Image 1 (tube, rainbow, N blue to C red):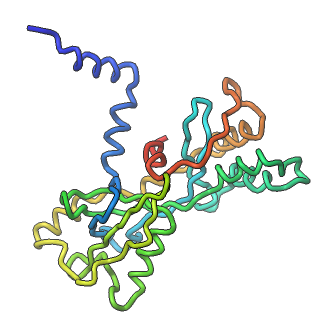
Image 2: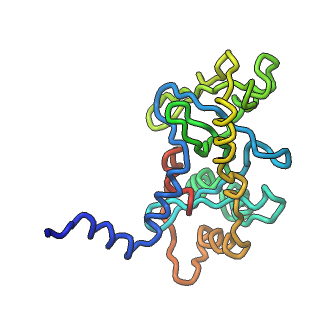
Image 3: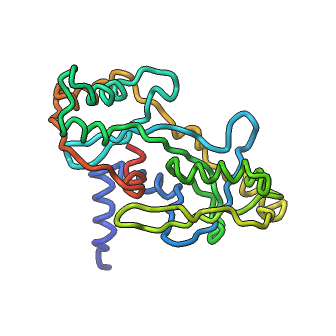
Amino acid sequence: MAIDLDALRLKHEQLTNPTAGSNTDFLQKFYQIPEGSNAVRILPWKDDEKEFYAETKIHRIPQPNNTVKNVHCRRMQGEKCPLCDLYFDLWKPERGYGRKEDEALARQIKPRSRYYMNVMDRESGDVKILSIGVILFKKIIAAMLDEDFGDITDPENGHDFKIVKIMEDQWPKYDQSQPRPKASPLGSNKEIAEVMGSLHDIHDLVKLEEYEDVKKSADTLRGVPAQGSSTPQEQTEVSDNDYLSQLQN
């Protein structure tokens, strides 16, 4: 019997890079928004103790290998955040900053809002995590505050939401996204129960790193190299797809 070289290569990759498979499994939980018009049903949380969404802010930290590390902003949970301190310092000439390269780094590490919620993909029926920025989130909230729609997450009388993604250069635009005007049930009682039993723990996605670890990242960016590290390269801001690819870091 011939040896399956492709299977051996996969096993070798798993042995030499044990996080590769887990990262792929992790990313499969997320709804990758295709270009064009896409219908999803935004789902409520399983109880009233938490919102249907989880909110965070992300610092995107350039790494020496030309990748980006995502760090949840500690200030969102009332904690001190060395990366926020660095962000504000980079704009202050009196602190020895204010150069163009400092401003470029500040724009990159600026904490940016991110929102997670459970959705059901109307095409596949799968329950996925939708990760979006503030522009699309505002559209969802505005719809829920509109008396013509109300709680669009209601399993029985809610509304599907059309996410319209149009690419301009490398950046996605969601200006045409809106809820469908006609209310509809999520499914039968059995289907609703199955969907609600498949919710992902979106609130568990927001995990803060230890203060000292975040401070080490900030010090490295300030030009104070941490032991065993090197000065990171400057990068431009990453797109939504790149954000997802680095989400588990």
